[in-house]
Length: 136
Image 1 (cartoon, rainbow, N blue to C red):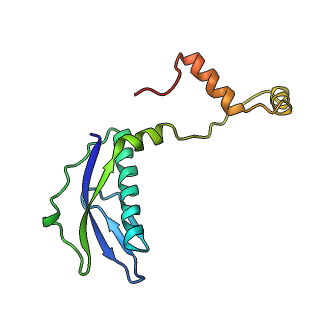
Image 2: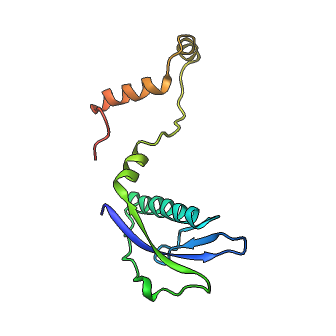
Image 3: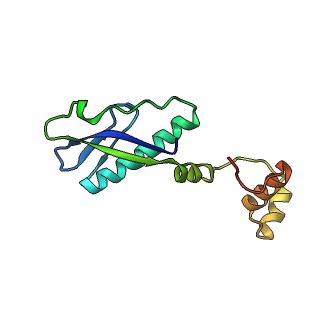
């Protein structure tokens, strides 16, 4: 699915911000110092959590209707939307660190010629695998 909408519980903290949880997704908890910050943090947390679930092939639960969620005193429920295509693109193109081994002489020569090792490795892997860019 390309879009999810889940209810989030915004619970005011004693320090003036909000703690945000998602009743249907117990693995998510975040907070924000202001209402604007809280909404931003809730959206980001939801998107990353759902991406992780998709990546692990975990089932995505059906969202609970907001009107049947218990809310703490002073808190409220708000619907948070997660648009997944940009998150998926961002995550599959995220740079990761790889440890590799080279003979010292080859490393020294490459460094002396200011070789971008990451760029060379990416191009060599693409060529070896017969791909140009990521395809779903």
